[in-house]
Length: 481
Image (cartoon, rainbow, N blue to C red; front, side, top):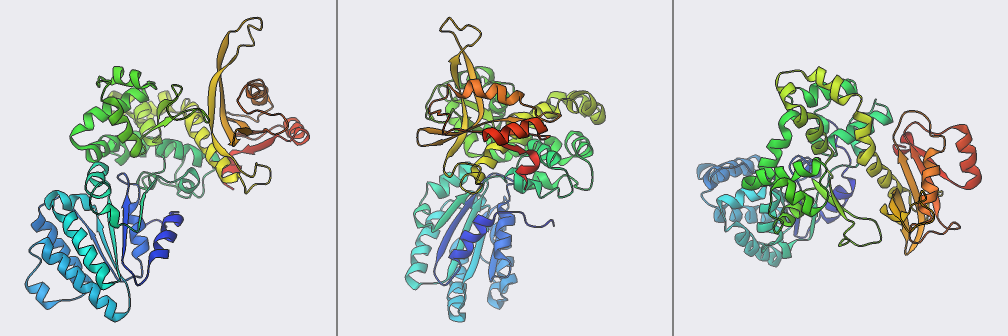
C-alpha cells in the first residue's frame, strides 16, 4: 500500500474528537475518493470495529458483522449464536461500549458504506437514533462513524434523516488538490505532475493506477488508453454505481458538457433532458464534484454569465481521449491513438481549465502567507463585456477574460494570467492582461497587483520589468514548492 497522502485536516478533526464522550461522525463522498483509507488511517492503533458493508441481504451482512465483532473480542456466546437481526447487533455494540467505559478507553465503530445496510434494513437509521439517545444517557465512550459513497442514498437516509441532528462532526470528502496528487509521482517534473493531475484529477484510486517509475507517456498509453486498464472503462462503471438507474441520463448530460455545452438550456438540448428537470441532475453532479457551476467573481451565483463545466479532470480526459477514440482503442491501437490524438494536443488540454484551476488554488494558499501577495482576498476568475479597442469610436464590446482575480471587499487587489506553453514567457501575457484589467470592476492601479504564471518560467527582460513594476511571477515549479 502506498503511503497515506494528505487528509491532514480531516484526520486532525477526528483526532480532536477522540476521547471519553460519545461522537457521531458522518463521512461521505464519491466512489474512490479515499473515505475508507482515511478511516483506516484514523483507526490505526485504536480499539476499533471496522465493518465495510457489501451489497446483500441483512442476513449476509449480519454474518460478516459477527465476524468483525469476534475479531475485535472473542465471545463464546456470540460465536455459538451469531447476530440474527440489527436489534441484536446494536445491543452487542452497546454492551461493548459499556465494557470500554469500564476499561477506561473509547471504542471506535466504523460502519462503512452505510447506505448498503439501509437498503437491506430500512429501519436501521431510526433504530440507531434511539440507541444514540441511550448511549448519551449512559455517557458511553462510543465513537460511531457512518460513511457512504452512494451520495443519493446517503443524503436520503443520513443527511436528510433522523441521524443528521445527532452528528458531532461531518464532511463530504473532496478530491485531492493538485499538490497532494503530485505526491503520487515524487520523481516526476513539476510539469508532468500537473499533467497527471490534469488527466486523473484528485481521486486517490485513479492516481494509484499509474506507475511513478514509468514516464507520463507510458502511463497514458498503458494505464488510460489501453483496453483492459482500470481507467479505460472506470468512468462508465463509476457512473453506474454512483447514480444507479438514472446513470444513462447523467452520462448524457456529462457528454453534452464535455462536448462544449455550458448553459443550462444548451445542456438540456444536447442531452435530450427536459429543460424543467435538467437542473436537478446538474446539481447532483455538482455535489459529486463531477460538474461545477462557475461564474465571474463578484456577480453572484444566479448571474446569467455563469457556466457549467466538468470539474473532474479524469472525466474530461476520458471523454476527450478514450470515448472519442473508442473504435480504435477497442481494436487495441492505443499507441497509435496516443501519437495521433493525444501527444500533440495534451498541453492544450491541460492549459484550460487544469492549469488555471491549479493557479487559483496556489493563489488562495498564497494570500496572507506569501508577502508578495495581498494579505486578504477572495480568489476566482472574471469574464464579461469590455470596450472593443478595434472599434474605438463605437460602443461595441468584446468578451474580456482574466484567469485569476482577487477581491478584498469591492477592491480588485489581484489580477493575473496563466500561460501553459512551451518556452519562457516574455511579456505577451502581460500585454493582453493590462488592457483588460482596467475594465474589471474595482480596479485601481495603485492597489491591484498583477501576477503571471507560466509553465517554463520567464525571460530575463520580463523579470527585470516585473521587479521594477511590482509584478508577481510564478512558474509551475513554484506551484509545488
